[in-house]
Length: 99
Image 1 (cartoon, one colour):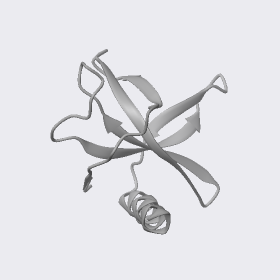
Image 2 (cartoon, rainbow, N blue to C red; image 1 turned 90 degrees about the horizontal axis):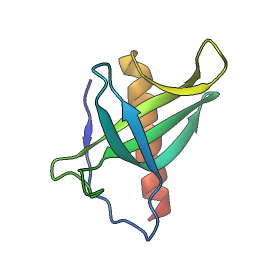
Image 3 (cartoon, rainbow, N blue to C red; image 1 turned 30 degrees about the vertical axis):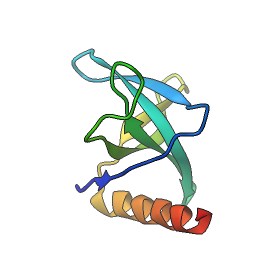
């Protein structure tokens, strides 16, 4: 699965999300965009370093909103490469339209 190299100029306020990986490690991400596509929502995230700045070689990642067993909203990996590509393409189109 490919990922996008991405540079982004920050506005004053950043929406920050802290995720915990399978090893229990916390990582902060800036929420770049939310994409709605085919009835699902996806978060476009950029990893941040310990100072809350964009990592030098940070690549945007895409996670899908889902519900856990208790009905809480969670973010999950997209396991289908075609779905990931559709979301990445939709996000690229959003960026082009915003310019």
